[in-house]
Image 1 (tube, rainbow, N blue to C red):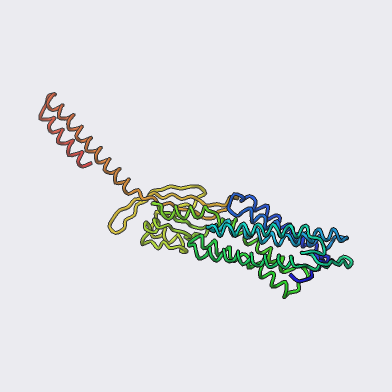
Image 2 (image 1 turned 180 degrees about the vertical axis):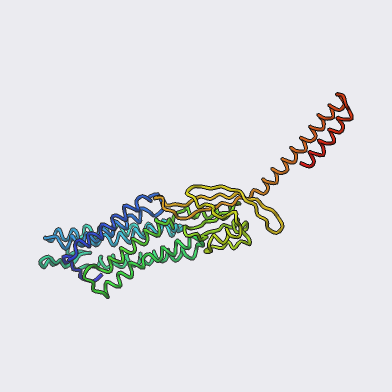
Length: 390
C-alpha cells in the first residue's frame, strides 16, 4: 500500500466485470460443497474477490465524492476480509489444537472486526483516511496510521497462514501431507500477481487480478473437483489398505493406478505394478482378460496355481464414471474363495459317502429279506464298485 491511492476510471469495464462474475460463479459452484470443512470460508473468499474488483470499477465510474468514497471503502474491506477468510479456511482444514492456538484465533477475529469498523466509520481526515482530492473522475486518497496498521496486520496474517501450512506439512503424512502441500502452493498465484503488478504495465487487466483468478480456479479444481481435501479419500484409503479382498483400480486408458496390499499379494508374479498396463496382468492370467470391458458390473470365478498350490478367486468388476456418466476406468475386486471351494468339495464328498452307505443299507435289507440272496449279494458288490468309481 502506498501513502496515496488513486481511483481512476477503468478502461476495460466489461472485462473487469466479467472477471468479477467469474468469481461469483465460482462461489456459487463451491456452495454445493458447503458441508465439507472449509467450504464456506472458500465461498466467502471468492465473494470478496468479486466484490473487490466490482467496487474498483464502480468507484472509477461514480460521478461524485460520496459515491466514490462508498465504493472505496469496499476496496479496503475486501482485501482484509479475503485474507481473514483464507486464514479461517486453513484453520478449519488443518485444525491446530491447544489453548494458545484458540486464543490466537479469537485475537485475530477481534482485530479483524476492529479494522472493519475503523474502515467503515472513520471520517476524513481521520485515523484511516487522510485528505481526499477529486480531480474530475479521478479520486485520490491519502491514508492515515490505521491504514498502515491494517497493511501490517494483513501481511502478518499471511505469514501466519503460511506458518500453519508449513506446520501441517511437517506434522502429517500420506494424503494429508499432499493436501497441505497443495494448500501452501495456492497463495503463490496471488503473490506472483502482486509482484507482476509492480513490474508489468498491462493495459487490459491488472496482473494482480489475473493472479487472483488463477488462484481461485486452481483451488476450486484441486480442492473440490477432485475432492483432495475431502475426508472420504482418507476413509477410503484406510479401508482399502486393510481390507482382506484385493482391489485393483484401472483408468480409462487401461493403466493400473492403484493396488491395495491384498491385491499385490494375490497378483504376486504377474507384473502387477502401478503405472503398468493392466493387459500385462491379464496376459499372464487369462481369467482377467476382458473383465470390466462392458458397461455394467461383471462377476466371474477363476482358479490360479502358484507355488504348486491351487487358489480360487471371485473376480468382480465395477465401472467408474463421473456424475455426468463419463467413463473414468474400472475397479476389480479379487476375493479369495479357496477355503469356500475346499469346504464345498468336502461337503460333496461327505454327501457322496453318505449316499453310498444308504444304498448299501438298502441293498443289504433286500439281501436278507427277499429271495435270491446270492444274486442280491452280487448286486451289492456291483453297486459298491460303481459308487467308488464315480
